[in-house]
Length: 252
Image 1 (tube, helix red, strand yellow):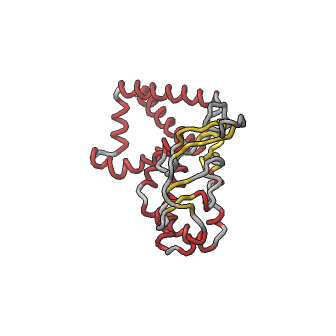
Image 2: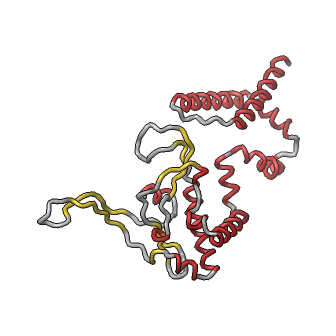
């Protein structure tokens, strides 16, 4: 819960203390306890949800999708707990496994005010990161949910940014289409060729490549490296072009 609070805007009650202690002074038996913030609202119930207006339900779906999107943004490179440990490589995402009706706090207009019961929160494979079953097993609810999801996907400006953050090479097309024409009037090939004619730039490139090789070696030695055939192919093609250019320069 602390990790979710520190890395997302998901409404989670802050935990002030937890542990085991005596429930009564004259009884030595210890009971588990947790002291956390009070969340305004009431537990979501199906009758309230189904009787609510379509506008309120769509608003609820939108807020729930935002919660899923924030969890999706916390994708881990390896599965396991948040405690220090040697992890096996497997892409995974934190998920609220027990997202039943009663674990969602809402107000009278179905605004989500809090998510409760994180006892069963876990990291799951990407393809297991799905909405709760009470949505996916209902034809009507699922249709509304998908409709809201489609509208948010088409209107969200963050989608393309997340795509670039996760796969930075997608920014190359953006640069050459919109930014490059504002900076240069000459063909791209000529500008790149002149860039690498600078000896200082060549030394900087070699330094970056060496750093990349050391980091890749570290990932492989610690079983953290994830093969990306598409990226490897692009890298090999680019390195071949650079090597060909250096070879031609030495001959001339």
